[in-house]
Amino acid sequence: MNYLKLAAIGAAVAALTLLIYFNYGFQSQPQFKKDALDIYIDRLAKYECSNCPDNYRRIDSNGYYSYSCLQFQKATFLQAVKKYRFPEGQSADYLDLMIYNCDFQKKLAREMFLNEPNAYLHWKTSIITRGLGLPPSL
Image (cartoon, rainbow, N blue to C red):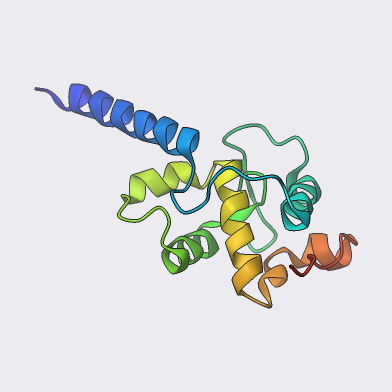
């Protein structure tokens, strides 16, 4: 089998994995009604990157790329994925795709806000400078 066929099979498997994963969500979190924090995170996404297209990234003021609706930078994203262990056991290529997924970013941000008192500092410009305000306490 040549390398192009292997790459195509790998891409198809990754796409199928993403499709299954996002149709069923995180195993530990069933479907739920949005609470105040979810609504806040939706608003934060509008402050960060209103109407961003899929696969959006830009070079931020610090010279690093910021990705998708919550403008995660890669180091912050990977640190949070590792800390909160989702999705476990995924390849670097898979995580390179997931950084562009807005729903995944929102779930990750939710974990950060629930578990890190200073998580808001990752979005300081939107929350403090632009005036979104601090996240609700749950």
